[in-house]
Image 1 (cartoon, helix red, strand yellow):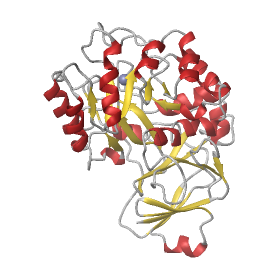
Image 2 (cartoon, protein in one colour; image 1 turned 135 degrees about the horizontal axis):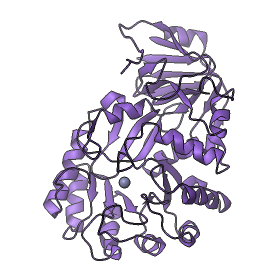
Image 3 (tube, protein in one colour; image 1 turned 180 degrees about the vertical axis):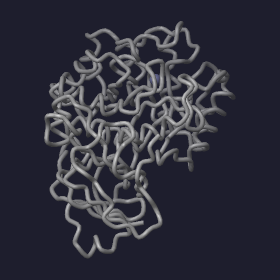
Image 4 (cartoon, helix red, strand yellow; image 1 turned 135 degrees about the vertical axis):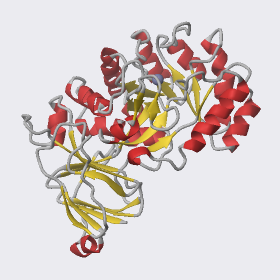
Length: 398
Ligand SMILES: [Zn+2]
């Protein structure tokens, strides 16, 4: 399938170093972006589908790097079916599992946690609820696991490892397992802040600096924050990615973003939701945190979007999250919400409004064109100007 998106008002790339691109159109071919900026009339003519963006803003599909996946499109914590499809209507096209800790009765022994990670990974290899790409299967590091165990599941495809909910007496005991996971080329993540499960102790700056994971999960608390003084140390004394979560502490999230900016470490700032959790199912969580950083934290909106897209992709080694030729065709069209005070999507975000999503394309396929069932309506109108396929891309009213 080839899609031409024409009549764009602005293109946000997702690359924090060069967050805006010139041009007014995008051409996709299969699951890739074929051309960005200037699509010729002949190329648009050759497309199966032409989407007239009506002056809206294109951004990469958002990447939520902290989603509490279990199995299927279901969250046992909030007893809700269809949450991933609902998140896609918030502009999210990629969800990365924060480990399958919410599976009821989850196993805690080495064979059990290995099997859980392998099963979750395989269950989502070809399953895209609502068009969402899901990277699942994050092994929960527990006592008794060995480096060989991690090597065994790495061979089966598992590439995520999570420290924080294991039955260790001290968080320092994760260190050898994190080192082993890294040796098997896994992306390692550590719960940060107060315990979100009763009985597990707080994880603070000292632990992060000793454990050296790739990512500090909810650096701003999940939901309880570590001491303020630890943020600058983690920024200055490590290269750990700083994942700011919607379901965390807002004040320390803003503080962390501004400290990262001051110390030229903004590339390490990632946005994620840490949902569904006790904080609920939050389909617009990514858009909220983007708006919070831009309106309260002084982060330019296009850079906040980069933290939610290209920076997540770089840290997690994903071939999406950036609008450029050759990258995955995961694209959201956003706009100023109808009835607001601002003219464009970026101005609305700077104003603290939630951007309105007008269309989402993931894996090179339009998932809906017209109106998200979760965001406010767009100011401008997007329409399918041409479609040679027997398909209807209007969002069904749920
Ligand atoms: Zn979490």
